[in-house]
Amino acid sequence: MIRESFFTGAFGIACFVSLALPRPLMFYFGRHFTAGRDPASIAEFDSGWQRLEFRHVARLITVVWGVASLVEFLVRVALVYTLPPAAVLVVSPIILGGLLIATIVWTFAYLRRMRARAVRQPVTD
Image (cartoon, rainbow, N blue to C red; front, side, top):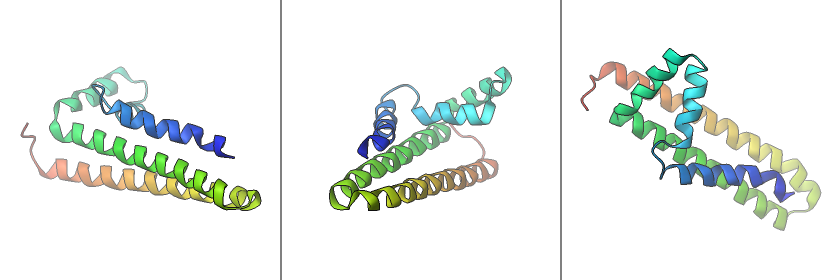
């Protein structure tokens, strides 16, 4: 039952490892969902990396997704060792779904706030 969360745990670790790379993992997810395969949109998204606030947003989103993924993994491991298998099978998808939905909602709300702030403030870096 734990193996269902290995991908989630690995994704969380990958998020944290990517923070040591030139661009964090969620930068690439953001670019994919924002720009798709359009070269001009990709170039525009990539140019955002020049701004300090943009880099901060990408890194923070990567940290939040890394934490959420590792929390899900650790909670599932704890459930497997403390609850009967039938209970784990019922509770695990609820926890995964709840964490996933909460993380997605937080991401979109945070991005909306950051975009609104960017519109109000001139670029200074």
